[in-house]
Image 1 (cartoon, rainbow, N blue to C red):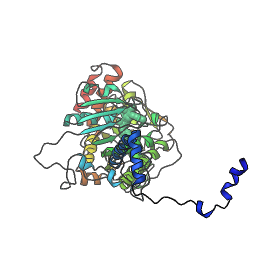
Image 2: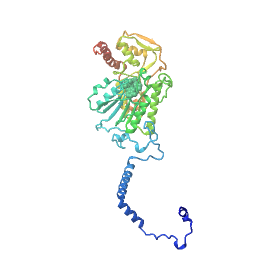
Image 3: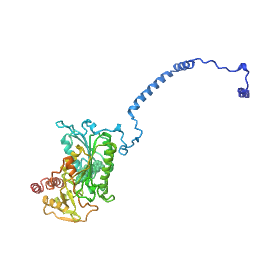
Image 4: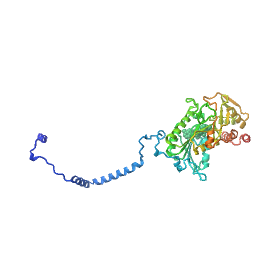
Length: 434
Ligand SMILES: NC(=O)c1ccc[n+]([C@@H]2O[C@H](COP(=O)([O-])OP(=O)(O)OC[C@H]3O[C@@H](n4cnc5c(N)ncnc54)[C@H](O)[C@@H]3O)[C@@H](O)[C@H]2O)c1
């Protein structure tokens, strides 16, 4: 029986029994399917499915803009900044509501300037806190981002409670997202004592450039005259490429800032970020870190404490000293101006270390002794800015001489070292009148 069943298909059938399919009835299968769907409530499911698919296909194209064929998929904004996706590029002018009719960003005369939202990294430090004072006075909203490595809350405490001021404790080596118009990037240990322990230049700059690109903000880098190293050109022009030891004890700072400049220009050229670069020469003034190894603060603190002034080497190496208010004016002009830079911002008045020690003796204590110590490695022999470019293009030059600026710093240091403004006030008066 079983074998019959198995082999039946192979038997030849009589012609009269042969299978002839029924002629096709049009719509028969369609009506059968429709009836099945109605009976089993499948229609409802089909309609719901169509509705969901329609919804998905209308939403997806608006949230995901397809990249141009040559564009690589961005992974980390701070790293993949080439090439620019034009659709994602925010323009600084556009952000400020300045149309193409005014590409320079200058406010027409007679119109009141709109307050900006500005982030100052390192704003609790020496230069940063003075910059914050000026920006707040101008009517801008300022967000200070600082990890207090060398900065102090005291430097900005007078703004606490002002609705235009915010302070964020944050390390710029970690990314941060803020909606701002301008970024002044100062966060970086600036003195030899500190930068050897915390070379944060490069990662912090990358993060802040990434932020500038993302929100369409203008970015200003505070670079340094150290990019010229031990210069073979004197005075130093911005066109000079420098003479820097890439593996010396100072190179974490010098080369870090050089790399920061490179990244800044790459973001400018490659990602269309609006950037400004300042090369700052030695700056002094109130709120400078005491005992941080910078020559002016060293001499002033030593003279006030009646300690000998330590001069490294023969004391004939030269520096130029700029008062902090002059620097802040230069930084703001650079940020608001039309030129990327780099710009030297410094006072061209040149002093040897011995001459500086004499000015400190005149100002604080004529009897202060000078003590010579062996020079530090890679200490530059000469430093003096050529500021022709800043004069011509920013209309900027320093106003405060060393003999006028030093007494202002001394009174602040005296207060911080002795906690008493009156102590030794006679020498302040003497300096002011001198
Ligand atoms: N003062 C000068 O003579 C001079 C000269 C050349 C360049 N500069 C540059 O100007 C900027 C300001 O210098 P300054 O003299 O005010 O120094 P500073 O040490 O007083 O200020 C630096 C500030 O940055 C903060 N900071 C450091 N690392 C940080 C980090 N990872 N995250 C967040 N905050 C951080 C510090 O806490 C401090 O408040 C620096 O970039 C410096 O390189 C200064």
